Image 1 (cartoon, rainbow, N blue to C red):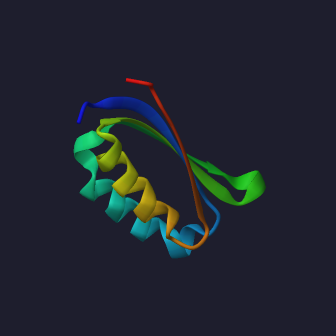
Image 2: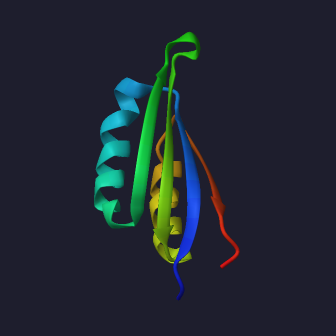
Length: 82
């Protein structure tokens, strides 16, 4: 499989409950993460993480699938065509 470049957006609604799980998953998949920016958005009581990723669709899908299964976490992904 060929590598794809993409952006993963993560919104965490319950930081206290979800942040440890999110960080653990991101650490497990650190080899495909090129860059990360996290912003605690106090006005809405959420945290937003933006990732730049470079990996196969299977690798990216494995990471986003685990993240999306955490209660209170929303994940969206945009990948390059090739």
